[in-house]
View (tube, rainbow, N blue to C red):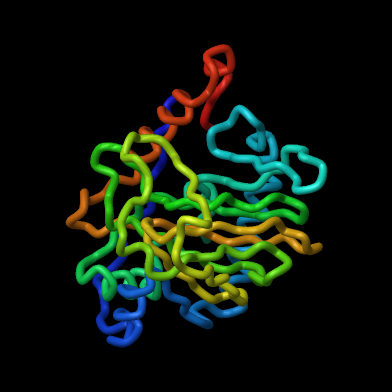
Length: 270
């Protein structure tokens, strides 16, 4: 099946100085940044409603064989629990608008010193009971994978301790990739990291940004509320240009290669 995904239209011309010098320096030194109250309650309400519409109207897509979605075990029962739609911007016009919102792109222009290009996007629902993400870095040793890759997290629901917020290990992005550059996804051992994790505690409308080399993880959602976050990833324009469709072609081929041969023919993208 053709897995090409429609690109969101380009944004308009950049403004300047979205961040202070201190904020840029903090990101460069620590590998993450939190920005408060970037989006209004009404804007987050619109995003919340539209991603929930997508989940309801495309319920047939929430299937273990569909490469658009992912599941994670329940932390108590071990049952597969729906967690991610990746991507979602081609299904949600509201999410698509967020990917090219000036308030995000201008911040990234300040961090990069040049325009940002959309690389991928995903909605992590983090339902109650779902287990957390194992410690890892987002960069992966594929040919041409941009080292400028970073992720912007738009909080739809509160990221609180009980909901299993993303935790970052500050400063370690400066060490680069900490695993073999063999094209595989690797996990890291906490005892090997000389830093204490910082939880990204966010209110709806807040943004968090972290580098692809910043080690991060999350705990299980032990609360009673879903913890939805819109994770939008970008690269610097000079670091490969526009790679959105190329990324998903390569990502889907990688998923197929990781799947045991008997099940590979059952995979699809819809």
